[in-house]
Image 1 (cartoon, rainbow, N blue to C red):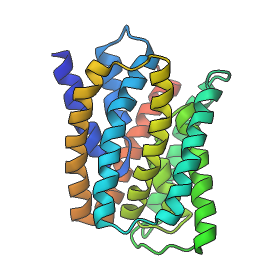
Image 2: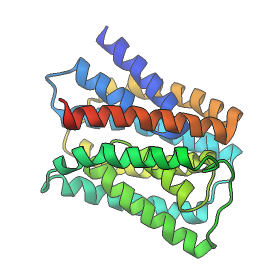
Image 3: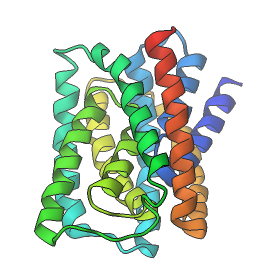
Image 4: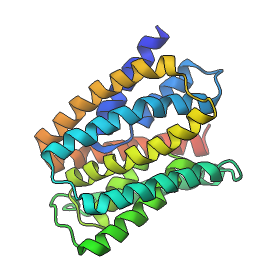
Length: 252
């Protein structure tokens, strides 16, 4: 029964993550609730071992249908990889607790801004020249990558929002770009967790299969319904993140 619950959660996480990110909002709580006495690092490592495959498959599926701006995203992915490593190292010497109360407020500002700007992310109109776009994407990759390694919740949503707001992408193209960078940050975290023995591979394999199946369905839905659909899912995921992180920070 335990395996069924977490496998179903991984399927749903892959679906949500493929559209706009935020799959960890589904799978991680399921793992923590099901295996309450297990070390958090082991559950986080197992989550990464499953999620990285769904994210990679989503990136590949999107790249076949959407024109990916590789000249900006490849350097940004490298920056994200380095940033995630640095963040993971930083959490070994600094406590991320100060972010717990700040995060729901940041997410609330992101949601409010998206709601006020009705046309935000509806049209794909990159606003920066190639070299400036590369630098901006790399800064986003390094900054959010560091956050992903250091703390994590909402990483995909932050990637999407910044690609829309800073680079002028629509929500569909921003989601594609976020997937590419998320692969890099997930791989960085997974390497660290694996080296330290914090991955349950016997559980990670079925979770990865379920995550990939959910990812394929989510990718199909996003490509079928376009930027408006992705925008709607983005707002739903950010709203859920606000409730979850707000509860963790101020109530629990």
